[in-house]
Length: 338
Image (cartoon, rainbow, N blue to C red):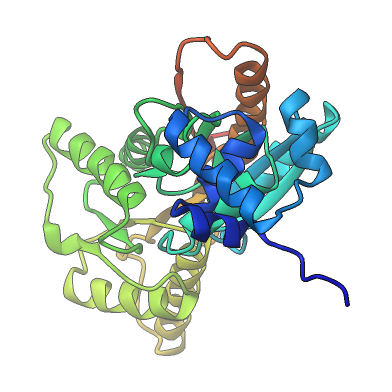
């Protein structure tokens, strides 16, 4: 009979530690107490756990593998970030192991356990970085996300507050003074930082600010179309809106075009009605739409990925390099902003 293979999870259970701790003991990388190391090794011996070749290789050097954790690859920011990161790392002969932690980071511990068990040299984390350092002690951690960062780890992220200021200032230059904000979830740190820039710019220019002009809605064209229509009906003097994402901007565009078409069909004189201008946020370059006017503030997601790759390689080659926090500026694309 073939003996059933003992898994690293069984070793962790027998030793009373996490899978990550067992993996770090096997690799010899983590700052693990001698008592814990002894307990893990006893469990390995008692269970007859066979250390695999990758673990043996780790004891003698690097694995050449980088772990990547993102929330959800269907989110454009993380898809673009991963593309830039993988492109840069693979060009240097590294292998990338990709995992997804979930929209709310609910699978973060499992992701770290899996990557550490595979013997990764470092982890690039896209998403919420809270408590991340405790999940992989001794393994280089680089944070590359929309907003959050970890004090003791290298981080790269977009300047969201600057993006909010840029969007607002662009509209002010076009002569707009009544500017609304549409889209996003109130719990989003990215949204909060962008709205902070928007509000600060309005206040700086002494312009009216109404909290009721800041509207949450689902990130879908349908929800955005309904929201912008209600907003216009309640505040007809609004002449511009900042949309939180391309789907929200698209929904606004369609609703505004329908409104204009309805006015023409009803033979209503719309000469005195100022067209609603739009600025949207995006994680990739978008085509400029001119009817109605639309400009995008683009986060450099792919560039952040490439920069995270460069920082990962530096951290591996120079472990004692000072921790660095890099905030990358957005770019204004479209209309006269490019």
